[in-house]
Length: 299
Image 1 (cartoon, helix red, strand yellow):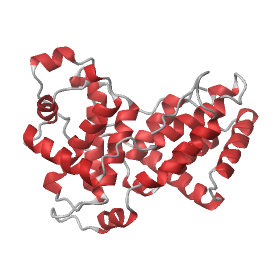
Image 2 (cartoon, rainbow, N blue to C red):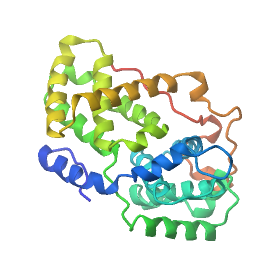
Image 3 (cartoon, rainbow, N blue to C red):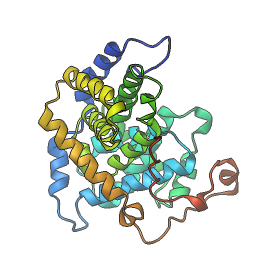
Image 4 (tube, rainbow, N blue to C red):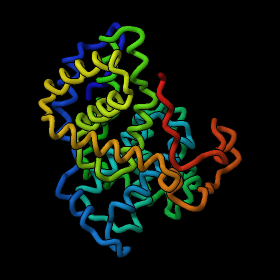
């Protein structure tokens, strides 16, 4: 897997883009499996979109709790959606599946010294399964995904596109698109099942187009739009498809901003941690909320 890299020693944009797009389809969740989840009734016996969304929000909380990177979270969601699309799991097993996907992503994306022990991760998330259960589930997940972990996520495309755009802008125009804000918006989209069916490159493009449109600054966004139009042509994305996904992004972010979405559960999460873990953690779990606030625009 070729990482997206910026800086003097980075490969040309076109080379990085081709490397990601060539792999994108191989790591996409199976549409038939996602549609099966989408059509399932909420009877406690089958996976549903609501259960998947609640699990993703819990994983986002864990990501913030440990101070892990956006890459870790995006990779965990990629693994989760890919597995759910090929395996029919019962709701009672979802927490184990979700935590295993999260743990695989942590071990892949974080520095080894920051990877928590499996039993501490189970304790903090207050799950009732054992380390042995987790190890067995992790093996099943890896086998079903053919041991392919590092997928070309929407975050990778978003960072690559953002870097490419910034290189072509003047100092004032560069302030328009905040990567921090875009990454927070992407996390919100990951919490919505509808984006599981959309290609990562398309989601990244739609986020950038939506954000550029929301700035209402023709003087500085005109150049951004020119670059986005060029990107759209390189990716062979049709106007109608991009507009459709951009509207879905807008709807998601509006819902995300509401009190109901920002606090999906009436009760605050209460994780149990050992003294040793508490001393190692950088952030206080007493201050963790389910979903982060999207930063205000830089302008």
